Length: 147
Image (cartoon, rainbow, N blue to C red; front, top):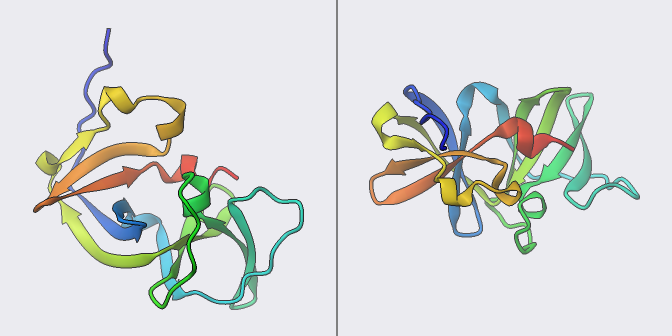
């Protein structure tokens, strides 16, 4: 027996790129977007925890979403950014390859994640949005940030 379909309301998302894929997170969770800066590694930490950054006197953890999602690591480039988001325990930075845009997604363009991808490896996905000729994977930010 399948679960009832999830109905999404219109929402604004920050769209970013990892490798060749587009992802979206709720804009209301985003505190700011900053250029990549020096990240102090934490010895013995999880591979996806890149380390700590100083943000105006506050020390915040920084997560590599590439590592978190099991994607191949890549060199940081000119477009690499840290998206500072509100996590369960305060501010957290997430490193992305590039921030693309802010979009308003109409409710009819948003679908629940397909049941075929409903397994532990896709726990970070909460839905998929169609925008023009591309798909945007909508992330469950709380699950993705679970350090």
